[in-house]
Length: 450
Image 1 (tube, one colour):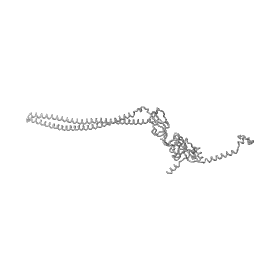
Image 2: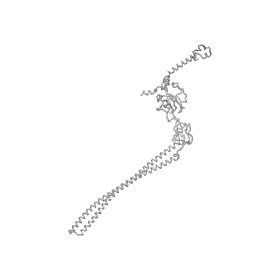
Image 3: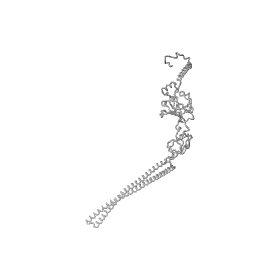
Image 4: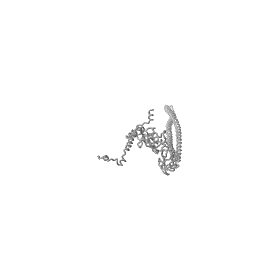
């Protein structure tokens, strides 16, 4: 059967007389099949030279252009307990509408009169500041009065010192006069004794001169004592000036110390007032946080924390909201090898999940159901998935994107590049080469203009 043996049966036995052979062996069919193969080969050869558009494809999802238009969650900046819901899932809310009300769970904030009591403390501290200000004014006046009094006392003491010095001068003159008198009295006494010895004066005259001499000596001692007393008065006057200066300097220093202490207490009281004002403002802001409101117009997608009386921590997610007004975009990812082929403002074709489309990657003109877009942002750092993120916005000159498109839907993007023969594309794919380096025409024109 396999023509292994040299004894070939088909040459010795005629097979045409058998019905089975007649049903199987039909030479005309072999000719048609051969013609089909030849036609297919010729067609395949022609197809290899047809143009093929190179492209860079990527997978992503629908998002928004600006971050504030994307789905977001609402958190509470303070811990609390859910008390009442004002909205349910699917409801439309406007900016500022109350979604739910929470209550306080921390003991230090549960006092209903907390703000009033804080304001009372602040007012008391404010009055304390005023009291310190008045005390400072009084101490300033006291210092001024002490300085004026010291000036008068010193002037009085200086006058007394001047008087004492004049008195010393006067007593010194009197003392010198007394010395002169005693010298005269001594000479007179000696002259009288001499005359008495010569018999010219009587004993009575000698006694009178001796008495006068003694009186003069007594006056001299008195004048000397008076002079010393005057000098002592000068010293006392100088001491009094020093005492007055020291005494009033001590009083002024004490008043200044009291003043500085009052100023320090005033500053501390002002700090306390500022802290209490800060606390009062924080309490008011915290009370306003009990009402969780919508940050913008949108729809309540999901209530993450439900029920009543459920407690939560600060920063936990409570509600998910989707803005009602948003500009759609597609977030797609391309491999690092294809990144140099992507440029800003380059046209991209998009196929959305859920919308029927017939797409031929190499023949975009024969595709149906795709939408146009333009690259508006290219990520400069690689993402966690090992690819680069590309943001594509709708092409205003093309067909509008579907109105019922939702953020998060899947999307496939195809960036069209150069036209090459199919055989070249097959050869590139088999060898794993990247597409031809591509520069958009508008970029070339801008470069030439520059």
